[in-house]
Structures are given as C-alpha cells and as structure tokens.
Amino acid sequence: MLRNLVVFAYVFGLYIGPFCRSQVKAVCRTLILNCVNYKLQMQPQSLPSAQDVFFIMPSRSTLALFAVLLTWQFDTIKGACDDKFTRCAQYPALCASASIRESCPKTCKTCESNLCTENNGGCDQVCTWANEAVSCSCRSGFRLENDNKTCVDIDECTERPNPCFIGLPVYCVNTLGSYSCQTYKCKLPGEMNYYKSPKCCKATNGRCGTTESIRDRYLETRLLATPTVTRIFGGTNAGLSSWPWQAQILNNGAPHCGGSLITDRWVLSAAHCFTSSSYENMFVYLGQILSASLDSVDITRRLQRTIEQLITHAEYSADFRNDVALLKLNSPVQSNDIISPVCLPCGETPEPGVKCWVTGFGRTNPSDFSGSEVLQEVDVPIVDPEKCRKAYAGHATIYTDKMLCAGYDAGKKDACNGDSGGPLVCQRADSCEWYVSGVVSFGKGCALAGYYGIYANVINYEAWIREQLGDDSANLCSKIYNQCRGRKDKDTDCETKLDKCETFPKYMKANCALTCCKLQIGEISNCFDNSGMTNICHIYSNKCRDPTLLTFMEENCKKTCNFC
Image 1 (spheres, helix red, strand yellow):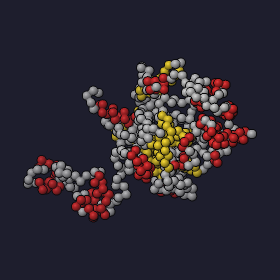
Image 2 (spheres, helix red, strand yellow):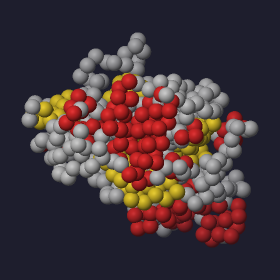
Image 3 (tube, helix red, strand yellow):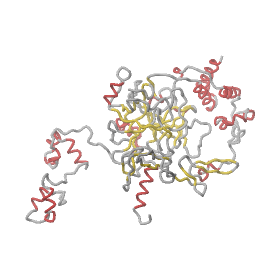
Image 4 (cartoon, one colour):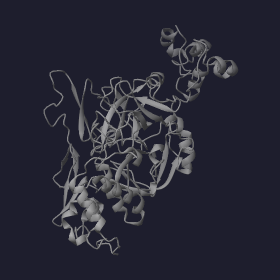
C-alpha cells in the first residue's frame, strides 16, 4: 500500500502536476527524493531518473504533508496577499514549510510588510524581519559593527591566539570569513597566498575570477602606496564569498545540478543535466552557501533566475563526450562581493599535479542521497590524461582531448551525485585570478581509490562558447594564455638565433617555431647581451654611444645599452 502511494505521488508530480500548481509538483518530487536509496557504479554526478530508483519508508511528516496537498482544491485565489488554496486556513501548523508559506501567504502571515525585501533592510549580510523590525547579523567569520548593520571580517590570525600553532612555525593566513594554516605567508606588496597554499600569487582586480579576498588585497596594496595610510566527498564548508560564480540549479524545487556564472547573463553547466528534464521547471540560484532547497534559508541577498534559453552541445553523447551546456538567464545579474563571474581558461590549462578546487551541493556521504545543505569545497590535483585513461580501461572511454581528470590515487576526495555541471576551478600561473578548467561530468562511484573525477575540459570548448554567446562573448578574455600551445623547437639553440625569426622566417618556423612564437607575443625578449660579454658590457656601459665602440656595443651589449 505504501509503495503504491509513493508511486502514485511520483506519477502525480510528473504527469498530472502540469495541470496543478508548480509547488505541488515540487512537493511530490521532494517526497520521492526522501524515498530514494540510489546506488550505481558508473554514474553522472546528477539526480536520478524514475528508472533508477527503488523505494524505502518515507517520513510520516512527508506523507502527512502530501496527503494534505492532495485534499486541497486547486482553485487559484487572486491577490498578492491571498492564500492560493481554499483550505490553507485549516493547516497553519504547516507554515514551517517554505512550500506552504509560498502557497498560503495570508494564513502564514508572510505577506506583511517586510523591510528586508527592500535593499536588504540596510544590512550588510543577513537581514531578519521579526516583531515588525529589521535585525541585521553576519555570517560565520564576520563581526557586526556598532552601527548594527555593517559586517567586517574577523582576522583570526591577529585578533585571537594563533589558531595554527601546533608546536611548529606554521603561519596563519587570513581570508574573508576564514583562515588557513600554511608553511609560508606572502608579505610582498601586491602578493598574497594562492588559495590555502604556501605559494604566492599576484593580486588583481579583473572582470572575472576575482574573489572578495583577492580584491581586498589588491585595494589594500593600492591604499598602502598612498600617503594616507566548497559532488563533494572529503570536502569542507565553503566561505561566504570564496566561490561567487557558483550556481545551483533546482528542478521542481529539488537540487538538480550545479553551474558556473561566466558572464552577467550566462551559466556554464553539463549537457547530461538536461537530457531527461525540461528546463522550464528549473530555477538558477546565485549568491548563496546554503542550498536553495532548504525550508529555512536566508534569501535576502541570493538571486533567483529562470532559464530563458538552453544550449547543449550538438555532439553530446551518452558516454559523456562533449558534456557541456550553456544556460541563458532571464535577466542579467549585478556583480557584488558574493556574485561575480569566473574567467574562462583563455588558453591556459593546468599541468598534471596542479591543485585545483571543485565545489557543489552534492552528496557528502554514500548513505545520504539528499546532498549537502552547505556549499562544499575540496582540492583535487590534475591527473595525467594517459594515467586516467588507463585507470578507466574497461569501464569508460576517456577522450583525452575532450576530458580532464582530477583526484587522488587513494580517492577520499571527489565530486559526487548532485555536483554535475559545477565548476572545477584553478588559479592562474601569473596571478591569483580563478578560471574554470572543468565541468563536473561523471566518475566511477565517488572518491574511490584508483578512479578519478572526470570533467569536460573547458579549454576545448572556448570557441564553441564564444560562438553560442555571440555579442555576449565580448571581453571574455582580456589576455590570451599559451598562444604558442602545440608548437615545438627542433633546434636546441633557438634562443641564440632570435634575430633570425624575422630575417629567416621560413627556416625558423620549421626549426624554432616555439621560440619565435614566444618572441612574437612578448613572452621572451630579443634584448640581451651576448653570452660571455656581460661583464665587458657593464664595464663599458658609459661608452654605448662612443663612435669608436658603437658597432661593438650594438652587436654585443643590446640590453646594457638599451639598443632593443
């Protein structure tokens, strides 16, 4: 009997639902998700379809709520502050559910004047409307100032006893809302630590890939120069503004997939997330670290958008080749401290061994299908493509030109169900800026030893992304990285023949293609003193313009005499 009821609930939500209210469909789908124990070996990291589930005992409260919804009359009552169903007044005790509050605003008293909906009530972060008054509060890692509105970062490294001291000289590195313990702390002007790393990078304030921590360090350096003064296994909770491009996609009110904001209007995700689901029932959420599916979640600063247009790669196949999709939001989003786009690779690709980060709201435990309530982050190193291909031999085809692998030999850290479409991001080699290197695609189980997470390799789809975005693709890349990718030198002495790149272009293209390319884009310079002449050039540096030595100096001391 119970199984029949659950089957009926699922069918009702999927097929009869379109004739009812969308919230009823969401509740039906939520009921099914509470009744699922989903197990598979080779799996895309997204939610299951109807064919993949089998049922277990649902909670009494879920069945009670479902029974109430089935007995309602679905006649809409017009008016912004009116209940949408005729029987709302009979069930005020159910107002704890966000679904009921939305459908029964009059009974649940959610339509009364709420100043938090206007400019966030003047609060920096969290606004709570209670007893007809605004109450401001801050996220973890921040402190509320005396004005009871402004939130400032708590510097755990200086305001409290060193949290990194464990008997070793470990440095505490502060970040917005958090900190990390490192073996080295970067101190030079304009520099900061790579994310949770002892290595240093250059702080920038670009159009994309810049978090609030990076921006703060950049601005702090500028001010000092003036006279005035988280499918995630093994991960941790993410900070408020650590991943401002993270998108969460809900389908009929249930967590579905992730995505990356790449412009103010477009989100990058995975094609397999949309093969069996209509995007018309989906919402995209930005600016949050708590799952949008929760009943009690702070919504004062997050943004909700519908999908105006869905573009999946025309050559996507069931073996996850070309597993990329683009979602056009119904309206642009304004960048701020918790919402901003991530950069495209712009030609840059991480080398094997480089530590990158994957984030999402997916599963964190093999026995818990519901996924994480808090955005998770986990570090994963890039894996050599050939090593990854061999690991999956007999299980899946790894297209090394289309896919990227990341993870540990021992497993334990990985993306999982519900993280599909989300970002694998890395920091630039020449700055702290973040770029999206991969899109969460699939894997054998989650965090299993010997098997790595598989991602769509974004660098191979940059041209496709620009083509699909059209005019919206302008200024996606302010700089092109690795422009000489694929070119090689046959000769071993190419850097001693840089002047011949122009005088003998045909020969140099055949034998010194990489070196001449680097010279052309300014990555290397032809301005140097000839080998063995450095000391002589320095000794006679005041004779650079002497007519007697001019010819000698021009030939041997270009750098010293600035003849370049």
